[in-house]
Length: 287
Image 1 (cartoon, rainbow, N blue to C red):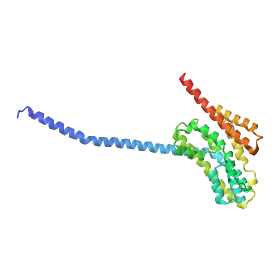
Image 2: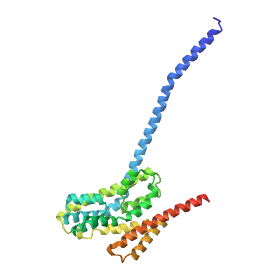
Image 3: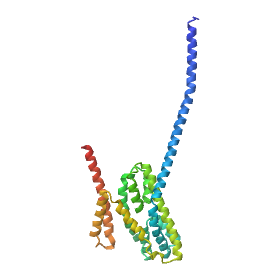
Image 4: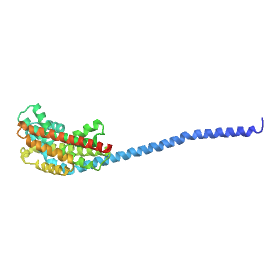
């Protein structure tokens, strides 16, 4: 063998050993990198969970003044359910399904008057038509959520929740933050509603005429204050003024159909203003 070949062979062996060492260490390095990535992902997930909890409880805390104002209405609804002979189970089931003090009291009155279920369902639907206007105004903020989440949040949408979240969404831009803030606010109001209802049923058994004591006034006053504070957008003004004008014009209609006309008209005006604003924004971008 030529002596010059020996270093070459030795070099080849050393190179191969080095390759083996590199090959041996690469998976370890990759595993280390993967561990770091997993740790980072885990930290991000943990941070996201903390952020979700923060927004959830922030939404719940924001509802405190409104829960205080709504509590008497729940007491009235619970007492009225007992006084009307609906019973404990029927009153709780109706409250959980309707999730509205106004619709609940109207439905209870119709039940006491012996009105059929179709009329009761139609009445509660009419009284809840204002939620269409709320939904139209919230749609731009919630359109990116999955359908199941939108359905869940829609169930928890009541007057107080709407006014709180629509104001908060001016500064809360993340869709997940909005989702959990909305959920916290709606769950707080729902828990308050059921709790006050049960207390009302207890009091209704002891004080039968408690439902006639005018306890619904605090919520009415708070609703007026919330409406005044929320009218800062020209689309809201257009929808409210349009609905008010239609309510006056349609007042002579029988069976309070003027309320239906005003609500549907206000919703249509709000939706039309939203569409017009989007078209105008697109035309401005093109220009």
